[in-house]
Amino acid sequence: MSGINLNWAAVYGTNNVAAQMMGDISFSQFVGLLEEPLAEQIGQIQAQLQQLNAQTGAWTTLQGDAQTLLNDLNNLSATGTAFQAVTVTSSDPAAVQAAADQSAVQGSYTVEVLQLAQAELDGSASAAITVTSPTVALNLPAGTVSISVGGSTVSIAVSSTASLDSLEQAINQSGAGVKATVEEDASGDYFLQIQALQTDAPITYGGDTNALVSLGIMVSTSSGVTNNAVYQAQPALIQLGTAGSQFASSTDTFTGVIPGLTLTVSQASASAVLTVGPNVSGIAATIQQFVNDWNTFVQDTENLALGTQAGPPTSTTAANGQTTASFAANPNQVIFSPVPMATMNQIESVMLGFYQPGNPYGMLAALGITPSGDQKGTLSVNPGTLENALATNLGAVQQFFAALSAQVTPLLAGYAQGPQSVTGVNLSENDQLTQHLDQEKTQIQEEAAALQTQAAGEYQSWLNALSQLAQEEQLFQALQQGQGSGGNGG
Image (cartoon, rainbow, N blue to C red; front, side, top):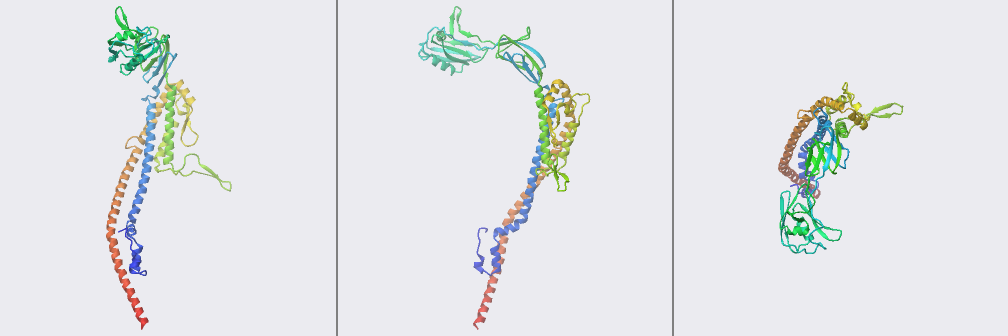
């Protein structure tokens, strides 16, 4: 019906009032008039939902900021691990390097490197046959050779047409746990070498070993055929102290020898002193992160819940010389509860005012942590002052943060931890109200859809009534015109 537009004036005449009314109001306009109150309600609900979504996002942000601070304080508390961070230095990094975890015990450890781990290398220029080209056929006896490394055995077929290059390729593609290479000696002759891919893993050859003897990979001795080893497989060996226990590793890396340390040796017949101590720079970075997270909490709170822009007021001077101070309105405010700002100010007051008697580093200022000076509640850190305090008396700094954490953690937990916290309650209320408004919006939309169906019938009834009036008006106008014509003719 909405797609049909009749020219009612052409049907009933241009001076027909009822026809003009039918032409002035289309079906879509008729429906719009009926739906207008519902559309206004939906618009109001949509505006409320947008505001609720913004508030939910803001409360979620503040909850996340506060939870991050809780995590920071827990790490810096008496049960946290921030102050357990250690670092290790080596007196000779070219010989021994080390990495420490938090279980490492502070102190000094002497490590003697007796030997490095080594992979077996077989084959030399003193082969039974002389090879002048790596691609020439070697005329080896045909057969199958097996290579075993680390418990894995692979068989490789050898033919009379095999060359050094083809053998190298076959071995390397076999997955035997070795690497074959063709080398050239000083006289320009070529020979094959086979090296294990693992250190401290002997190579065992089997099968038709005559070909390996011809190639110089194995040699015949009075006691039989054995590997022609350039380097024997061996583990790395270290000794703790000049006369301490010895330890072996199949690689050049040692774990568990010194608790909490992973050692990597790289030079035999050398020694190094490893010193494990507090990781001052790492602990300072953890404290700096706490300050950074506090500043984020402050900035987000002021941006989302403060009615005016943070910072000092703006001064203006009138023509009479009188100066007034004013704060600019904050266009980003979406939370109008005073609780976020009050909580932030309370925590700030506790942190800046907290003092631990008898502790030389019993307040934030003694650690170089002070207000930024922008009058916005943020803090700044003097890295030199902080690291000096940590290096001078780590225990005192640790005691201070343990006590500070005990003061601030309950405030943050009540604000952001769990469904009964300030943020938890507000998020829950917003969620419930959002669900209610969504249901109300859906109900109104369903009413609007039903109204459109109902409107079709009402519009047709309205047209029928106006059509009747238009016909009567047309008839009346015709009668008037007829009477007028009759009078003029007499």
